[in-house]
Each structure stands twice: as C-alpha cells, then as structure tokens.
Image (cartoon, rainbow, N blue to C red; front, side):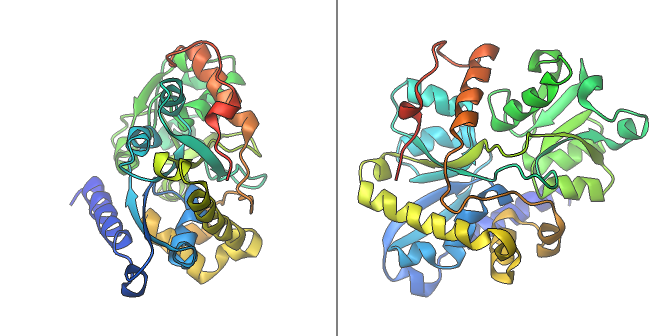
Length: 322
C-alpha cells in the first residue's frame, strides 16, 4: 500500500470515527456539522468535541475532514455544513464580495515564539547541498496545500518578501497533505510549505528541513460560520463558548494532557508521540481574531491579482462576533 493509500485509509477511518458520536451524546442535542482540516491548528475544536464541551452546550456535533479551507467556503455558505475550521483564503474573501453568508469568527493556531510548527521546508538533498533559506527558490517548484490564494500561499509570500521575491518568482504547486510526503520522496518539489505535525514528520524522515517560517505572533487560520449560525446569534454564541472552553483547556501545560493529545491524534490521524514532540502553536483562550493578518492577507491577494475585486473590504464585512 502506498503512503497516500495509508494516509487516505487513516483519514477515512478517522472521519468515520469522528462522524459517530457516542451513544450518550446521540440521544439529544441540536445537530451541528463541522468540516475540519486535519491539523493541530484546530485543536480547540477537536478538544471541544472530545471532552464534551459541545455536548454540554446542547449540540450533537459531527466532524468531517475536508481537504482545504477554500474547498469548504461554498459548503458553509450554502448551509451544507454549519462550521468550517480552516485557513483564510481568496475563496473566503471572494465569497464575502459576492455577498455569500459566511463570516470569520475566530483565529486559531497563532505562530509561536518558540519552534516552527508551520514552516517552509527545503528538500533534504538541496538542503544538504547548501540551500538553507528561500533565496534559492527563484524558478523552483514549491508545494503547499491550496493555491496562491490559500493561507499557506500568504505565508510563503511573507517568507519570500525577505529576499525580494514574490509568488510569481516560483512555480506554486497545490499538493494536498496526503501527497506531500510522496512529492518529497519523488523529488516532485524543491520545497514544501506545511503545518504541524507534518513539519516534524518530514524532518524526522529526513525528507526536508526547515528554512523559513511564518512570522511569530500571527494567525491565518480559524473558524468560519455559515448562515445557520449567523442567523441564530444565541446558538452561534453557544458554539463559540464551547470552542473557547476547548481553547482554554490547551493553553500552557494543558496542551499535554493525555485527553487533549488523544483528541488531536484522533482528528489529525497522527500518533500521540509525534504530536507531543512536535513544535506547537499558541492559542488564545478567547479565540480572538488576528485582525491585522486578516486585512494584510486580503491586501496581499489583491496585489497578486487573485481576488475578484481591487478595493479592500472592511473587516466589518469579514468578521462575525459572538
């Protein structure tokens, strides 16, 4: 079985397990559908589900894995799922511009002062040959989950800025998480931008090494609500309260509680030992929105010409507060 087949089999299993609430929880509660990208970036949501905080708030939640945030925006806006946990993307900004009913309600996974859980990684043979930063990437193939209009594309643009380069100076490849290891093994990319726990996994396997990371203290990922919750503020507030309980639970030493690690392992499909030793993200107990990054990302995408509009939308149109 190939690496991709192993990953997809694991993802299918974790998706099925995640979609089956315990008998106790299935007996009551409002249905709540949540699409998630399998990364520790979204640990507050995983913990809120597994530790019963959503159930306590009156919800019978079903979690389903999604490939990338931009894939989920239309589903959320059309009420095919109530919540998406994913990265900010051009798809989100364009959805708002089209007056679709979706809002960004929380930031998750702030880039930490210590460690590099989200990073640009140079393929091992190129790193060994002396390519230790992004200055050597002009004209090279760089992969990440999504396209130029994804959160990862924004982070790569920030890293390239330091060397006077832009996204247009590289060949960007959309490589889903299940295919990233295979792409590195087959030398289909020169560098890969990825998120924890894959950063640690690729370094451990000596497939790639970190040569750049997103700036400390920013967050380009989070939680999105669709019309079902946006049109029902009390219910939306109850969901956010449960998510904030999950966030508060993993701040500081709480991150390493066995039950929290188990929740992250379940939804990322990665072993507890890997998650425990991987560089971790910072989380704000109140899940506050990183407004500056939200607006700078929009401006970056406008500059790149990948949004359907040229005048930035005000944050009041982008953000939902609950």
